[in-house]
Amino acid sequence: MSANPPAMTLRLFNTLTGQVEPLAPSDGKALRMYACGPTVYDYGHIGNFRTFLHVDVLRRFLLLTGTPVRHVMNITDVDDKIIRNAGEAGIPIGEYTAKYEQAFNEDLASLKIERPEELPRATEHIPRMVELVQKLAAAKAAYKTEDGSWYFRLAAFPEYGKLSKKDLSGMEDGARVDVDEYEKDSARDFALWKAVKPGETAWDTAIGRGRPGWHLECSAMSTEYLGESFDLHAGGEDLMFPHHENEIAQSETATHKPFARHWMHVRFLLVEGRKMSKSEGNFYTLRDLLLKGYKASAIRLALISVPYGHQLNFTFDGLTEATNAIYRLRTFHQRLTSASLAAGENPVMQELAKKAQANYMAALANDLNTAEARAPIFDLVRAANTAMDQGQLLAGDRDAILRVLDDFDAVFDVIRDDDAEPTRRALAWAEEAGRMGDVAPELRERLALSDEAIEALVAERTQAKKQRNFARADQIRNELTAKGVVIEDSKDGVRWKRK
Ligand SMILES: [Zn+2]
Image (cartoon, rainbow, N blue to C red):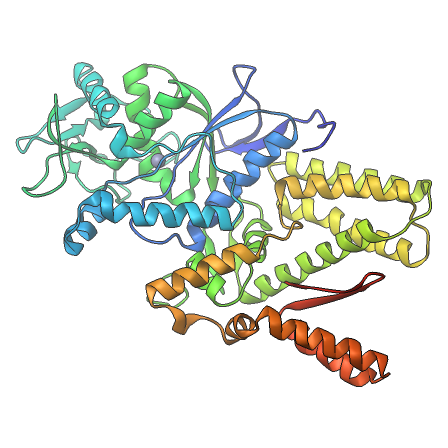
């Protein structure tokens, strides 16, 4: 974090009001935010992670500007799909979801998504959900059907639709829907609590035997950790209707208070210009991309470089561009930190660093415009490289530029190279999951190259240079570079590292 966080208020688009508005903690202490988390029934795909990454950008920018956050993200570990899949696998739902919850945690770490302060599981908050249904029943906003399920009566909440601005004039009183996810434009009374079939996972509670509906989970857990009214609720744009509308209806009917003041929705992505789908063959999990040899940092940068409110067209060219951009940043950072520079400050460089910093912060403060925030950083790198070539960069400039890069990495987090671990983890997983056939040939070659083999090639290169056989020396360096090994010649001899 910056030593002197600039006093700067984030202005963020609010879906509820349709306006860009300042976002600051209403209690003057910490910004209380809730983001809908994963349903742990499968591995997360890049569309899911685009949303989680942009919430991470929000979180990190708030922290960078000195705003403490209290960030809650739920883990949905019971729903229609989980019950169906666990049933088909013949295992308890807890056993089924544990595997995917762990995978999700690993994927968060791979993408350097900071962990929220709280990651509550739905199955551990059943009493709170039951209480909420009881409150709604007492307010005549919930009713029980013959099979023992509970529904929310939409007619009890006239403001329904205020978030998604849907025209619900055709709404039919008493029409019901009992699935967790539905996309129909017409609203229906929705399930709060579901009676279950024999053999399905259920809880015995004061409102009967059953299990919670998905919408109820988020209302119960957000208000438990953040209070009845809180600052911000985030999620993917696909959750706006009906999920978020239903959360608002339940919560505000139960508490008579505004639920979340600010709503942030992250837009969908396309993959190579088309909607991502398994049938189109363009559906990718994070793990798929790591096995193809892309680095976690490049995936992170590619997914956050287009602002959250815009559709991202995710392409493999874009991933390559991100890979190259990160390489430029890291090479520059390495050059800057290891260069021997004369003491003093160059006023031109000082001014450039100051301007880059100001433009970077202003772009993020303006509705988290990540695309505009990137630009001044890369301009600064270009200018500083030129200044170093010409001996115009001084030691005091280095400090100023490093501070800018620190602030950039406080949000983007791609300069520090932690890419080896996610790839290693993905490969270990591929072996276990029988996915080694999907590992890219380059990645296999890298793996096949042992430390001893690298040492032998490095020694041969040193020998070749001594014998003035520069052609062979270059050939060895190129061969190693192609396999992801970087050689650095220094005063103390030759060092190498895997990229
Ligand atoms: Zn939710």
